Length: 235
Image (cartoon, rainbow, N blue to C red):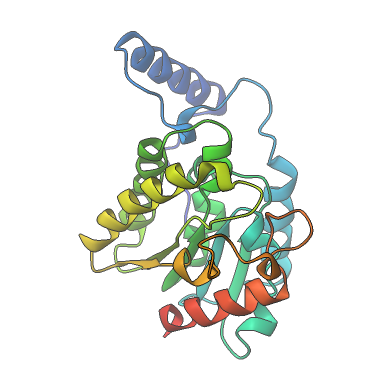
């Protein structure tokens, strides 16, 4: 479990410092990354994170395993069935953007000291209006946070999937994927799992059988495909 810094600032002071940083960024005219956009209101994911911490307390995950983290495509994945006999931990929480995983990276990832992280997020970001460049920047922030604490940990990014429900965003999806893949190509500790081509049919559109009725979340066949594509990154 990751240790807390003994010299951590009191809660009130940390909030004040965070506010000052955001004000300074705004005055400078710079774009505030998603992970830093913490509103004064309570974190909407507090219950999910608390549930993860309760599970960690009762069932500690061994160091050196694989942590899956990200949005609902991770949360709904039956990892124990998909990868039997492997030390895998699901830390997906639905509806999230990349920045949410950055903000909670210590409790989601770092405390478990994994050898490998499998990461999926990004389509919620684009659907919310974030740009491909912002998606790449937020992923870079996630990688930086992980590698600052765990420099040898490998991180595999599952490409933002082409989906029936969000087909109108496909140009942005592919640009975001291109930017993230370029970053992965520059670091041997990063991997890129290409799911775009394998999820398309003869007509160049997403295969309906890979999705449940909403056209966004994966069906059993969709996860079976992802299992095959991701398995080599667990070796």
